[in-house]
Image (cartoon, rainbow, N blue to C red; front, side, top):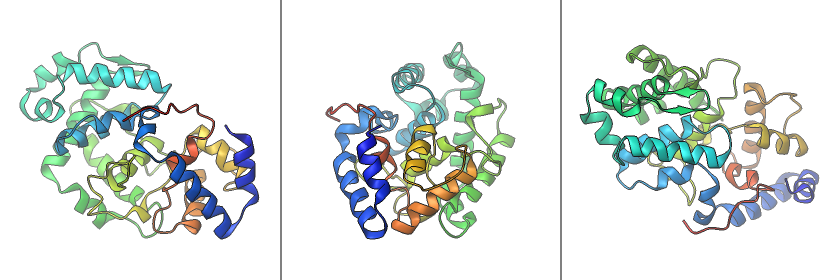
Length: 268
């Protein structure tokens, strides 16, 4: 972490802090920095249906070291032969199980991943998910968390294989970092977030994908006094960012987490 930059941010308030965060956003929120994040996998697809499935998959496996996450995603891509939408729509259940057989990423096993993918496909083909999120959202920052809770419940009921830890319960105490990141990718549109649902949903209702790295920065910025990066900490950090940028409280998430990460300055 760039301690000097974070310390300087921590001393600022109000418009001065927003101006500093905007400067940091302009510094890091560029396509050349995608390589440091699982979102790079999403951008590797061009068909909208493929890209949505890639986002669902990449967010689910976004735990651990970036290099390990990327290796796991490349492995999944080989198994569905670079065609995620066709794999889910055209392959039989047995063919899908055969393709994913033996997949392991840390504590994720093939049945978890298959349940996660098939659940997405079932819901996406039987519901207008953006309309459902708009309908079921609570007001204010983080409002899509309530909508996601209903989606998770229905998804778990729809599939044969249990997605397990890949699909945390948004109604529980967890920060739900990975689902929050997935929604950020889906709802925001800039050089980092592809935003396939950006024309239909409101970024003001997203919540911060809080992990231990962002939590440490948030503590130094005095955005929360929580001792653990739980759901309440995510709510408080989101509320603090919403006071600075109410129309887009997760705007600064990607850029601020680049501080001190040794992000490669690579081409997209």
